[in-house]
Amino acid sequence: MMEISGRTELELEATVENLPTVLSFIEEALERSDCPPKTQMQIAVAAEEIYVNIASYAYAPGTGMATVGVELSGEPVSVTVTFTDSGKPFDPTGKADPDVTLPAEERDIGGLGIFMTRKIMDEVRYEYKDGKNILTMIKNIGV
Image (cartoon, rainbow, N blue to C red; front, side):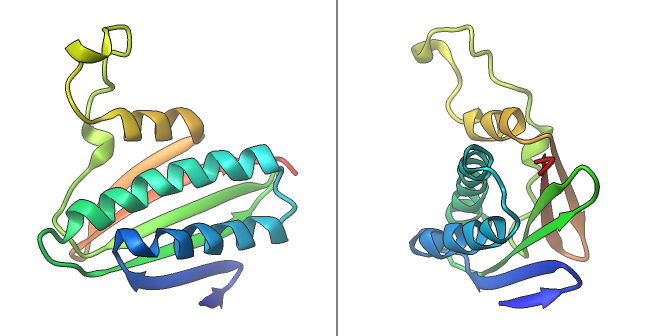
């Protein structure tokens, strides 16, 4: 774990078994910022969704590394959580939102996680740069 000009990063093997480590890392950063518990929970739900997708699909069938960054900034205060991996290029934000008005059995499989993440967070963006997937989520917390 390292502190980079107000940004804290954690690099670890992208496995589902490391999810508790990722969530603890994010929680500790948010607690230092006096982030409200409800907002912490929302960020944790979104982070879990993104990280599990990286762990499950980015390097399949093998494994690789992922970096999680947390940064607090601005007025009003916002939290930026960034996930970086060198796995297969994949833009989850490019997927159309699922039709949640359809009964569950008529919906396409998948897509609910990024849909939920977009609803929870104020901004979700993706870029593929220098051989890396970079997914950035921003939540305004206005502490």
